[in-house]
Image (cartoon, rainbow, N blue to C red; front, side, top):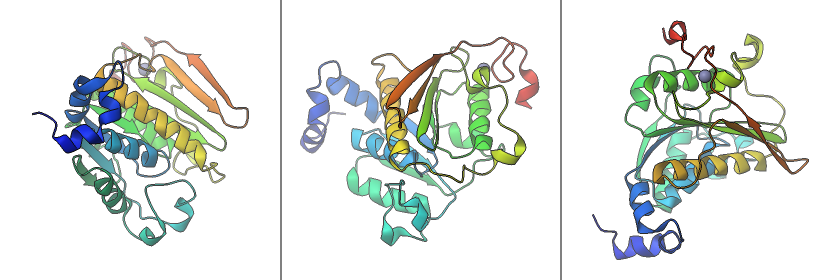
Length: 256
Ligand SMILES: [Zn+2]
């Protein structure tokens, strides 16, 4: 289906971008991305993916907007306090780009619902704020062979990794187990600086656009770390490990 005159204007800067063009825009329109978490990371990631014209965006979050979210979660505004985050997010994204289909899931991600929720999507974005969810996303995506973009933030720092299951290193190849149980459920109480998830969530959107269009080199086998105080990006190179408890050759015991 050809782009309408309105869409050609909307995406004009993509159409005239060398190495991108209408062909890549077509691929974005055919793309389906699930973003788990509509908070600090999910806000910029969803904003840019909706603005870019990704065809279907899944949004998942069981929380309501609180006033303390607004320091960093830029999808939500002061009048949204008390509303479910997915409702607030859908309203904002629909106003931004009515061409994007939005599929809101006001649910908590669990081992029981993850596989079914992820199945319709080409790519999953981990925009969650706790290690339990991050390792669950890792393990479910490995089992489903579903590509995903890991991200996490803390204080003035953040990190990012693209994972192509069975092809590139997963989160457990780098860090086999989450931190001890006491710290896995709750997000860090201190911080983060509000603009840090803005940086990292925007990078997730860039990786997602590269994945959907096939342009550039994905951030696989490299954990990119960002230290906002030092203004420093540092790549940490990683390899798939045969002994990885999730994606290694002897990993069956982790797949239930
Ligand atoms: Zn692995």
